[in-house]
Length: 328
Image (cartoon, rainbow, N blue to C red; front, side, top):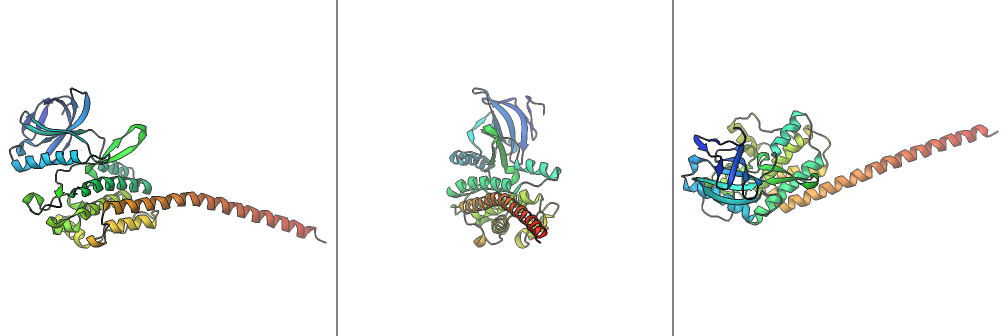
């Protein structure tokens, strides 16, 4: 679609404007909605507009889920959770206005794979920490995201060059305090990132399922591999439920023991042996980063000390050699 022009969403012609927003170009599309880059005309601010698919606009349940996402995000104000400005309807279209961010983590990982580069260990841990921080806020509200994956993590470029990783797409969030199971609370999410229990007993999942999905993201960031790519749905489900992932050491040997333990704990098939909260994950990552920083300070010191000792030993050998030559 040419920038600045109206377009089509499904078989419905989309206008150039929607309420007080000027629609520019589409930036993402899913089965439930399309996201456009837009300008909020009164303020001149660029935003992302998520518009419910017209084919779903008559479905009360989908409208409820769509608006629930907006309310959820408005209640979860956090730097690592996408900020929503408005949820409304105009011209027969339901939409959510939110902050406009950059590429997705999935895009960033694809670029690294294309250039045959691996993500630095510390960077992967810091990204995982930010996602865990966002999940912690949601989990404190008894909400389970259910679709934690790289394409739902957006990259924000803040002033000063700082990169902020922002969790988005809370459209399938589940209230873990709810007792009624509807068809929308059946198996929902992206299979490759689902926990075993999310596939096998979707009505009984809790926050630890999101932590497993976070482990999948961390594993992909560190390994540079899409683990289940090319598998049939049946094979994928079997592997998630029963088979461990290939050891991360198969893909790289530079990871610390602490990082490997974080991966193993996040990706435990049993919820009881997984991290029990996002705070547990954050604490483990902080310890791993601290240990790595200490090693990075100690190693140069050891190298300098070793070089100094070798030099001293060399001088001593020369001195003693000279003394023995001078003896009668």
